[in-house]
Length: 295
Image 1 (spheres, rainbow, N blue to C red):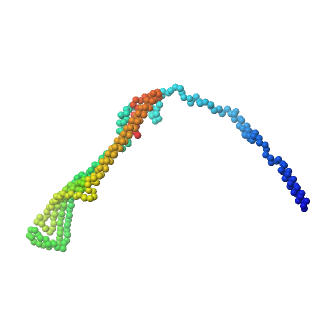
Image 2: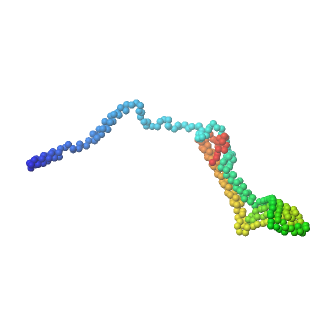
Image 3: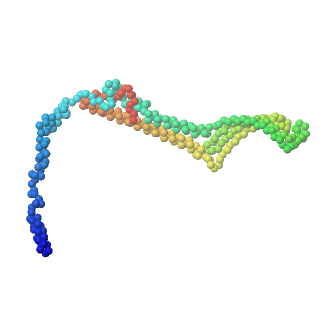
């Protein structure tokens, strides 16, 4: 038993010694040419491309067509959107400003505001205008009573009446006006026709006429001209503001027109000096759209 184990251990040690001395797993020495061998083999597959006549070399200089011509063109430069075939007309700065003011939509809209505010002033002032009034009324009275003693004016006799009847026609007319102090003045004339039964007066039917002058004035609330004329003052101030806004809009449009005109004049002079476009003393503009300058 001991001998067999000793023989097995000696065999294992011998095998391990043989494996340790072997150079099977040692790395190969470094060779850079061998590492690039795959790339060199692949490059030989595309060696036939150099024989293809369809491929051309890239130019090393710019083509002759891209070089700027030494001669200067004398043809006029036409701005984008400008049709050279459309007839043109010479326009002075004064005429351009007149057409701008007459046809600009912003100026037209701003011109309505002062008129609207002026109408509101008149509307608030009209609250203090005199007002004429007239009124008509008819009343029919037919009542039963418990019995009233009625004396006849013609005979001075006294009788008991269980009826109270009357036909009354009334008409009122007059003039009234609101006062700046907050009060109201009223001049009124009224007349009435009365037919009553039983008769209580020597005249039946009879007329009644009244003429009255009434003035009412609050002492606390809405007293004074400041509070009653406040709407008029506000409307007048709004009218002044709208007039200034209209003037501002008009001046802005005129300034923009003048700026555009002088820019166009400078551009045409610059083009004429370079012989690139024809000179236009007063600017060029399409005659089909005389009011095209709008900002």
